[in-house]
Image (cartoon, rainbow, N blue to C red; front, side, top):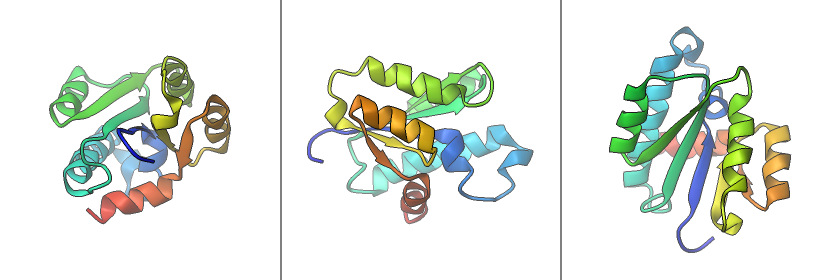
Length: 135
């Protein structure tokens, strides 16, 4: 893909790729992912100047949203229980005019099917996590 791309990240899915004890402190895991996204955005030539939007299930602290915004990563929380972020991602994409410029990062097969049906590309969470770890 050429031009400006928006990466829409299924945050909980990407966090779950790395069994580092994230389940004991979900807020810290979210903060680490946002920091990793910001770092990769600055270090990875393919991610530089691209939009990064990460969705998380649940209700986060305003501080998490502000710290994401300050680092150039849009953070969106989707209250409503498990998999609420999946529905929020689909609703978000339904408002997008240029679906050809969107890459959704997830390994959730149901979400992947739904966003492909809308015209978005999909990148697997494990592959994306490796990319973050390489930066």
